Length: 197
Image (cartoon, rainbow, N blue to C red; front, side):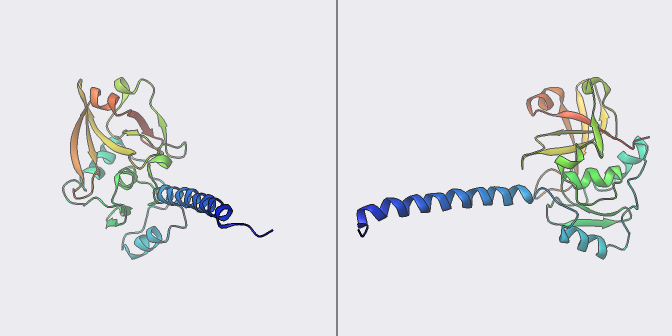
């Protein structure tokens, strides 16, 4: 028996709906992948190859003062971008928050994002961090989200921390104050680079 038009329409609509759901999932996955750069990320490889200064051969072991000094070299100079890499005497690093912290910490890789910086390879959470966070450490939140952020700690005060960061399209790397109240409201916590001296 040949199916009627009335029978076919619901079937076709269901198929369209399923394709739409699959397409949305693919789009979300693709959106997430833009934040998760991998060793085969051609853009980062190309950026490093064009930079006259090679990447460090291994993750650097730096003092807290050295980390902060490296961070300050971008302040007021390097524009925020998820798609561009800045080349200078330290190598080539992406011009977003995670690229900035990677540069300050002296990582060999120029492909990290917030989620990988908090991993065991590079850092560890700081217990009782509000009392123990130090210059050269970082504050971070929402590692799985596009809204995730990481900022380098310049110094701690009784009211909060001064940070160095790349944080927003249309701005350059900057220095900002984050109060304990702001940090708590934003779900921030402290992390420590594993090779800090």
